[in-house]
Image 1 (cartoon, rainbow, N blue to C red):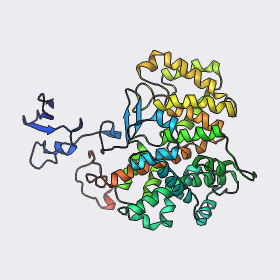
Image 2 (tube, rainbow, N blue to C red; image 1 turned 135 degrees about the vertical axis):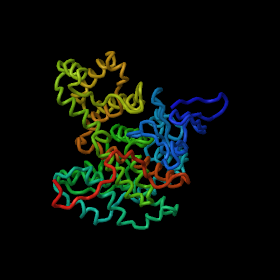
Image 3 (spheres, rainbow, N blue to C red; image 1 turned 45 degrees about the vertical axis):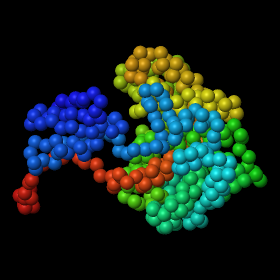
Image 4 (tube, rainbow, N blue to C red; image 1 turned 60 degrees about the vertical axis):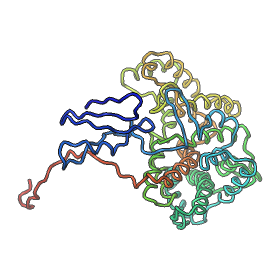
Length: 435
């Protein structure tokens, strides 16, 4: 198949060498519409040409105004604002408002928004009974996925997704209750009693209170740790059409309630290739063990005997802008918690990899997962909580993407095509004739 285009015309001319026919396909936003290829047929009865794109490596499934990424230049922006500025100048709740409504809130809007979120931090007592039914060593992320899904049974009116007031109420509930469900899952896994929300605290401070309060009359989080976690939530708030966001959109396209769609997104985030990647970094550092073993580990990676976790990214090809922010954040956290002994291993891995042609040619640079796990661990979060922390921050992005999807008139229920490579028609033999 040959392709060419006339200068000044936003079209693509495709010649089908099987038939000699040429077709002119419009180009919009540097893309062609996949269904325009259906006109390319050998016979009238043919289905028409399709594209084959496993894992959606080069297929746009939607038009979006939420997040912009330029992987070659290391750019990440929410609604046009650079992630570096948002991390420095805003709180997570401000960024959540930005993602959902498209603009940063003024003081009045932020006060009202925070009040709505705070009002909905408590969960129904039966949610606690549901959590009590899990095994004592149940994974917190499994509990989080299950309880997010269960919320749909407590708020059945959420199925009215065209009702904007109902939709907004669901936003308040999911963003408000996500930290509560996460903290309760952690407390259950440790055998500790649940701690109710303290709405005098900030969004992040309240979460730390529900996680770690023991017998204090009034829990007061360390301001540096509180700020660090707030920044981490901002960095994780959205990241374009990743696996979990695609799940949110795909499941949401059936017009199910947002709780069920968010549970599906959380389940996608559960996987070690997504929300569990920073945990894999820590396991890698544990396996290396000491600085003198770093060169040998690097050698094994280059020989295909191991994998360098926390390096490289499907989108970013030079550097992950979030990793630069987190690296600076780590220094501030370690001044409070003490230096994580794994940091020296991480720094040495980074130093060697960034100077090695093997990794440079493959554009393998530290990503957001490389240092975030070290910070979480220093703040006393167990490894199993890492994907749950990710889910708290990502909830606002999922909801922004879901809201955009259900309002998009071009969207229909997700239904990818396939290339069938199985048997043709076969007759079913009698049982006695089967070998």
